[in-house]
Image (cartoon, rainbow, N blue to C red; front, side):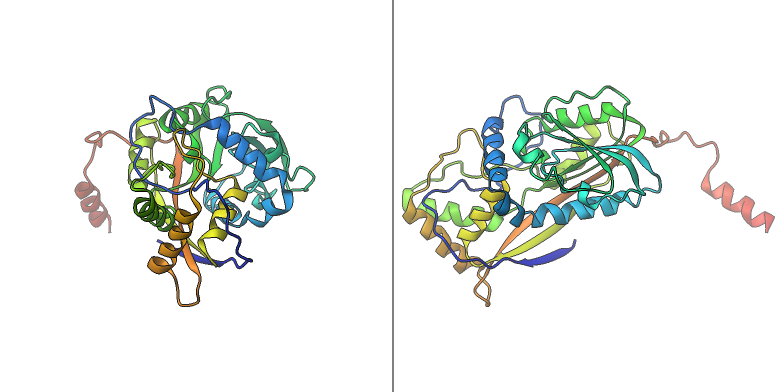
Length: 329
């Protein structure tokens, strides 16, 4: 498990309301109902992309993880002609793509928001980019048509994650690759704990202000149920330091990563918010007066082919092979 440290220092501002983004519970079964309001998420991303300068200032997390995705893609020793980038946003992955690796990258966003997709449309990349608006919960790709599918920090907002994985697997060609990252269950546990304690103290209860995330330990079983083979799941912890809790909240809003749970309460009382900031600093504050925020990144690199042989299908044992090798020597 690796830990990378960032520092973000800006002038504190106390917001009057809060759309917090954090994590709470597991989601291990296919969703039979909607947890997230997808329209709310579109509006949040539209708002994020509308302020281009502020939006670019908070690209640091998605850019860093996009770089790691491309680095892992380089471990696959072949050249891809077409790569689909699901939930691409403004293009965090494509800026790290080398033309020697991929002939054409097709960038297609689940946001269903043209503002986010075209925020950096005038930027020149090493590869050709095709931008399309679509929803990850209803993919239009035909079966066996894609060589590789990438997804950078977007699948955690999908209501039916197993269903999305099944659609991705069907769209891949034999020996196709699916490589994705998503926020895991321990993301922003510091913010979640502080808000819960403050609201319990000041208002006598806890409201659904946090977004449930899939526990990283459950991702492997979800991939297997979706039909993927030779799956690998890894975890990184990305720790970012902020002056106070308010800068963290501002950045989450600017990223378009605010809470989008259907039953969320849109407002938080000012005294509860101030109490949460004090609790955050008391529980997690560092000697340099900053507070840490942990982003747990779950990795899901997969290949749909080849499939492992069935147990017991071998025609000779390892012992016989080694004995024959000894005789030859």
